[in-house]
Image (cartoon, rainbow, N blue to C red; front, side, top):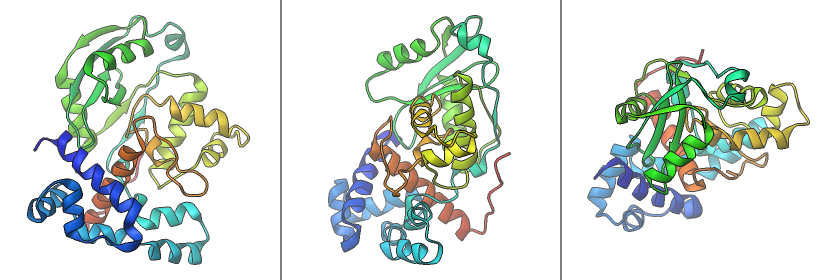
Length: 287
């Protein structure tokens, strides 16, 4: 089974667990949702998440959230404890920003060459583009490669484009593997957007965050709405972790590439962190 098909199956299961975790659905029920035998489902889920389905389900227990609320009083912290995420890939990466200059932004990327291509990932097909400076774009593809290419070129209307699927394959290995090297991000946006994205990398690497917390982090506590728009314009999925922005009440909120994908990414990060803790691996902080 390829990674994209695997994600779709597990995505369905994650959504089912989210809706029904209070009654702790049995393994046979989860396997039926995935459309697999119990044996194959258990093996596929463990391969994808690194944990058994039963153990993962326990991480979503509301009791964990209740304990965290009682002890610390934070809804966002409680959402974290209930299994929405934990640790995460950004702790394993050295992520550095080299955003385009205001002049390059106004020029629409004129003089910049972007090598772009497509590859598989645990969360579906991706479209990635890199300049000499670093990774400029990472998006999930749901409506076909041609439409995805049109959307990329609309962001960089005057750049030169070269098709290179090896670029996307390298990005997929770096972003979604257990061990990865240094990643330089080179997105194009307004000064305000870039400030929000940098704050998102910082806050998102520590756990879930909110629009209000991001606004405070950039020194504009009353700009939550504008911050939300900047988060929605994020051009580098996953590595600029807009999937970690929750509503103040701890709910998932929306996501440009689909709430089910957001839920699956948070679950995958949680399982990865749990596996690392179990193996005695300490994640390095983001620089």
